[in-house]
Length: 360
Image (cartoon, rainbow, N blue to C red):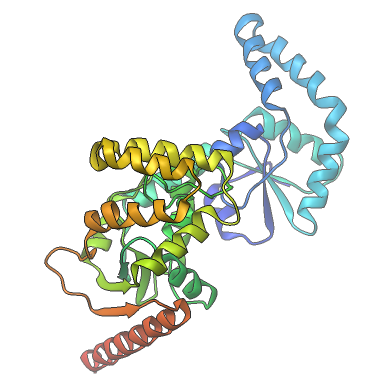
C-alpha cells in the first residue's frame, strides 16, 4: 500500500478515519475536523524531545523518542485498530514527517492497512486558508437580527435539527460574542484555525442551497474573526427581526448562562465582564451591579445589563438603510421557527418560479 496520499484524495474518500498522532496540546490547539487524537508522545515528552534535539542533536532525540514510544506501542496499535474499525487509518502529524511515517511503517510490518497524509496538518491548513481566501458565497444569506435573548440562536438550532440550511456561527465559535459570551460554556474556547476549518465545512454543505440562515454578527465573534466574504454576505443579506419582551429575554439569558448553578469560574467571568464594561456603564452603575452580584441577585443583574447597556447599544438591531423582510415574535421559539419556515418557503418558492420563468 502506498505510504502517503494527497489531501484532495483524502477529502474525497469516505473509507478513511483521520488519526492525529501529534501531542494532545497540538491537537487541542488546531486539528482537522473529525480527527481522533492518538498521540505518540505526551506534551511533556514532546517538549523534552525538543530540548534534547537542540542540545544533543537529532540522533539523540530519535533515540529518546524510540525509548518513549516502545513501551506504549501495543496500546497505540490497539487504539488505532479499535478506532478505525472497518475503515483505513489515515495518519498525520504536523508536516507528514517522522511521527506519522514511523507509525505507518510499524503498522505495515504488522500487516495493518494504513495511509499517511502527505504534508500533514500543515497541508490541510494551507487548503483552508486558500479556500476561504477565494470563497464564492453563492446562497442568499438570511440574517436573524434581534436583541440579546430574543431567541435567534435557538431558532437556528431548530432549523439545523430539521434539516434546513442554517449555520450556528456562535456554536462553531464556542462564544456568544459579548464580553460575557463564554460564560456557561464547558468546552474550551475555539482557536481561529479550528473555527475556520469548521466554518468551511459548514459553508460547503450549502453551496447549492438557495439560502443559508445565519445570525447577524459583526466582524468578530468574541476573539474570533469572520472572513471578509461572510461579513459582506451578512451585510447584504435578507434581514429578519426576532423580537421578545424584556422579561422573557432575561429569563432565557439566565437559563442559558447561569443555569443550573453559578460556578466560581462563571462568577469570576461575570466579574471580569462587568469591570470590562465599566468605561461604558460608569463607576456608579458598575458598583451597583457588583453589589447585586455579590448578594446573589443574578436576575436583576441580567435585566439591568440588558436594559441599560445591550438594548441601548443594539437598539432594535436593524441593519442600516434596510427594512426587515419579516418580523418573528419569539415568545415561543417553536412558533417563531414555524413563522420563519413559512417565510422561507414563500420567498424561495416564488424565487424558484421566477427563475424558471426566466429560463423559459
